[in-house]
Each structure stands twice: as structure tokens, then as C-alpha cells.
Length: 222
Ligand code: 5RP
Image (cartoon, protein in one colour):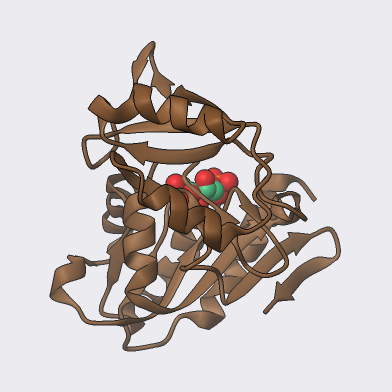
């Protein structure tokens, strides 16, 4: 199976976690897009969704799925999202699609995080994928130096030759050269650095379930 087919497989498998009558939290990315396509078949059974990005909002609305503001609904039963890396304990690196801040917010509002990913995302230690960090632009250069002190090389993410601006009006640093052996400690530390909006390590909002697409079918990590 191709990577695209594996994404379709897990996107469809995630439907069984959607609870009829409940608003669902929806992440961002190419794997989640497969889930959204599948979710359209259930749109008459759910009130709608809380979205983690402008891109996801547009896709949900295009398929006739109502989108609610996070502040207008209470706790969500389930949040479904992809990952750039996930370990066996459900810790993730996220933010390859620059949506990490709203993803973490919707995940924090949800009782269960269901991660959907193809098996290439499963790692022993987080850090091979460049770690996304959303930052206030005026702090970017100082934060690059702070990551250098931890052995990381941080670069501002570009789009069409200029800094990419997130849905929240901020920049993304992508940090290479890290090996994150203690995701909770790392997330706690970096989250406190002035100018950091959100670090793309999801340890406090880790996945409770991961549906991994493999050549032999969907493998569930829980
Ligand atoms: C977006 C994300 C995505 O979940 C992550 O980048 C995985 O994306 P894809 O499913 O396209 O591989 O964190 O900010």
C-alpha cells in the first residue's frame, strides 16, 4: 500500500471513535483530510466539529459539516488528529502543518486524543522530524540561541521566501538535532521560554489511542 492509501485506511478507521450526537474535535493535515472525507458520511449523526485550523475549517464546511467555536462548546469526547512522530507511549511531535497551537488547544479540551498516522511516524525517540515551535516573531532570534544551547539548530519556517505566518499571526521555528528522551520535561521547560507560544511536543496532551496504518492493516496502540 502507498502512504496515501495507509492514510485513507486510518482516516476511515477513526470513524468508529466518532460518537453520534457529540461534537468532534478535528486536527489538521493530509491524514486528517482523509478522516474528514470519511466523516462526511456521518454528518447527519453529529452536530458538528471544533476545528484546529483555517484549512480544516474550510474542508469541513465544504463537506457540509458545521464548525463550532471552541468557546461555544464544552468538553469534547474525542479529538482526532495526525502526527509527525509518535512513540509507543503516545507522545508526539506535531506542527508540520503549522497548526500546533490550535491543535493543542482542542486536544486539551478533549477527553480522548485519537492519533491517526501511517507507520512511518512511529519512532523510538522523538526528535528526528524537525521540531516545530510557534513563536512570537520578536523572540525568534533569541529562541534560536536558546535551542542552540540545547544542541538544536532552529530555523524560521519560510513560505515563498518569507517567514510563514500562522493562523495566529506568529512564526514557526523548526528545530533539528534534538533527541527528546523525556518529552514531558522538555515540553514543560520549553513552554516557559518567553516568546514561545506552543512547542510541538505533545506529552501533556498525548494520544490515548493511536491508529497506525501498516501493510497488514490498522495497528492500534493504546
Ligand atoms: C499539523 C500537524 C499534522 O497532524 C502533522 O503534520 C501530520 O500531518 P500529515 O497527516 O499531513 O502527515 O501537526 O500541524
